[in-house]
Image 1 (cartoon, helix red, strand yellow):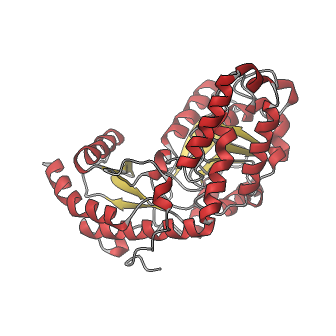
Image 2 (image 1 turned 90 degrees about the vertical axis):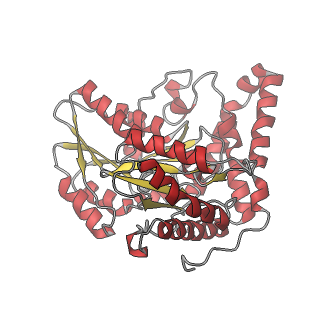
Image 3 (image 1 turned 30 degrees about the horizontal axis):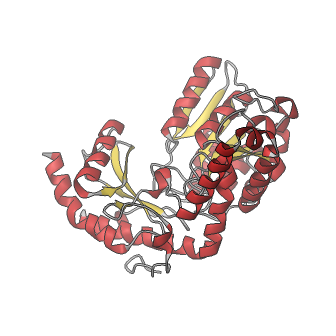
Length: 394
């Protein structure tokens, strides 16, 4: 479908969500949005928990966690016995960093597309262990072969202990060829962690075929699971070496239960998560994906043209991606604090939720498309955004 023509809305899809109709919610990528049916499934689990907490936590809880994990891992093409449910991708990154056991002289390599909280976690672990962190630049318009070549050239065998690479970065929404990157790193004996926070639900994925040592993705974004649901997949060689961040009663069982069981926490997001996958399948997973990709491309084109950008100036993130970025005028949101302030200003003045990031010294407006969005929401933003940005720069 051409980016000049919006997709046909999926019948009834908008009614599945409880979002405020007065707000154009064009930022599904940040925190997701939970279908009403999944909200109710989680509430029923909360009601069950509060009706008899001892029975909820004491009878069959581990079996229920395992059941949810198997359901979600199978959906993602991951080995259920080599996967663990975790609260977020960011939590899993810290778990992996602790388990890899960096030492003085080791190096962690990231790309300049890495998520800010992940960069912070890497830097903290490097300070703690005496390791160092280094960043390789990957241009926004670099083709896949160049991305692989740049990362491979930046790896230093015997020095680079861990490569952290995003499958679909938050700030730039540029799909990276992680399977080829993992293969290149494997040839040089470098451990690979793939941050796939935005992948589950949005993109078809076969985690086992990627070949990374560690892969983690959030299901509470595009997988329509309750917030606090992510899946960490660990390659067989690493499973006995996983060092949980929290030690509790299942510690001696080893991975994955040693990671999943954390005492008296709220497990209802994990137990309700399969309802999100069920809802996706009810609408048609491929139909949802095609709709969202096409609407994101359309919205990017509409807003980009309104800001005076030619189609060639609008980054193409790659196939299947339901997030698109629009470069902002020079001087706007060039730092992260400025980006946060501009995002809030757009929200306050235009009743539109977007994401703004500072990347490479330039502001990027990120637009997401989900089945509850309509083309007219992007048109409204396009009509009002240019004047708002002009006034904001004064």
